[in-house]
Length: 125
Image (cartoon, rainbow, N blue to C red):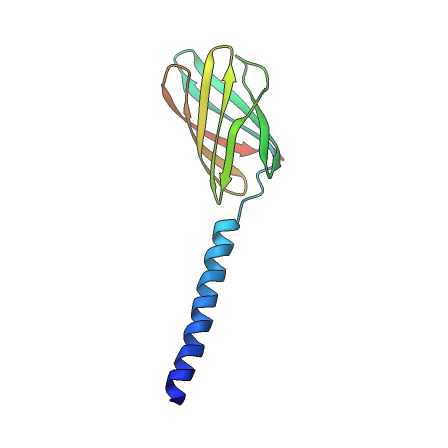
C-alpha cells in the first residue's frame, strides 16, 4: 500500500513539472520590440526593409521600404519564436513569416506577385 501512495505522489510531481514546463514554453514570447533592418535581392536590386515593432501584446508595428512608406502590420502574431504578419501597400499584400531570436529575424517574404524572398533582419542597437 505504501508503495502505491509513494508512486502516486511521485507521478503527481512529475506531471506537475511537465505541465508547468509545457505552459512556460507555450506562453513564452521573445521581446521583439525595437527596430529591425535587413534586405533581400529582387529583380530590381536590393530592397531594404525597416521593421519597427512597437508592442508585443498585441503585436503591432510598421514596415517600410524605399518603395513604400511605413505601413501598419496586419494579422501580426508572435507565438514563441515564430512571428508572422503582412502589410498592404499600394502594390498589394506582402506577407512575412519566420523565426526571431534575441537580435535576428529570419523571415520568408512573399511579395505582391507571389515571389518568395529570404530576409534576415538584425536588431538596430
